[in-house]
Amino acid sequence: MKYQSNIDNVMDNLVLKLESLKETSPVLREIAITLASSNNRRIHNEGKNVRETQIGKYSTTPTLIGAKSFRKKSTANKVLGSKKKRSELKWRKVKGKSLAILPGGYKQIRDLDGDETSYVNLSRTGKLSKEFQAAKIPGGWGVGFTTSYGGDLRKYLEQKYGQVWGITSSDQKYIDETLSKEIKKKFKKR
Image 1: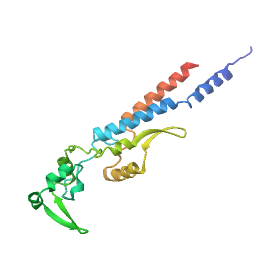
Image 2: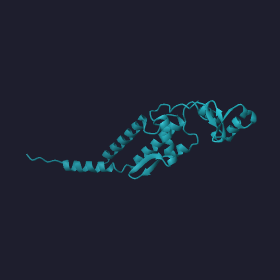
Image 3: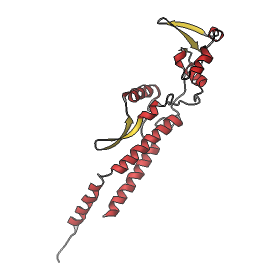
Image 4: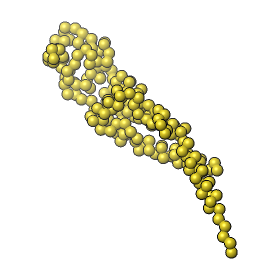
C-alpha cells in the first residue's frame, strides 16, 4: 500500500494565510483609532482610569490663587475684582507677589469656573485630549501623545492618580474580538 499526503500543499496554504495576517494595517488602524477614542471618552467624559473606576477627587486643601488661576477672566473678576471682594480673602506674599488663599482648594477653582467637580475630569483646556491620538508608526499603528506637553503631563497625572491611560479590560475584549474576526476572515479566503 502506497501512502500519499497533501501535507506540503496544506502547509504552503497555511503559510500563505499566516503571512496575509501581516497585512493588517486597516485592522491595526481601526484598533488604534478605537483605543484613542476609548481613552479620550473614558478619561475626559467619564473621569475614569484604566481600571474603569473614578480617577480621583479634587483637592479641597486651601490653595494660593491669583487672577491667572482661573480659566475665565470673568471668574477671576468675580473672586478678586473689587476691593470688597479682595478684603474678604486672606492673603500671602510669595516671591514678592500677593496671592489670595482660596479655602476650597482646586475643587473650588473648578467650581467657580463652572467646570465638573463631582469627578476628576482632565480636560481643563481640551489640549490634552486633542493631543492623544492614533497615528501611523513604523510597522503599523500606535496610540499616544503627539507632543511632549501631553507626555509630560501624563507622567505628572499618573504619579498623582495612578495609571489613567491604557488598555482597559473592555478595550482588551474589543481587540481580541477584532483580531479573532480578522484571523477567521483570512483563513476563509483561501
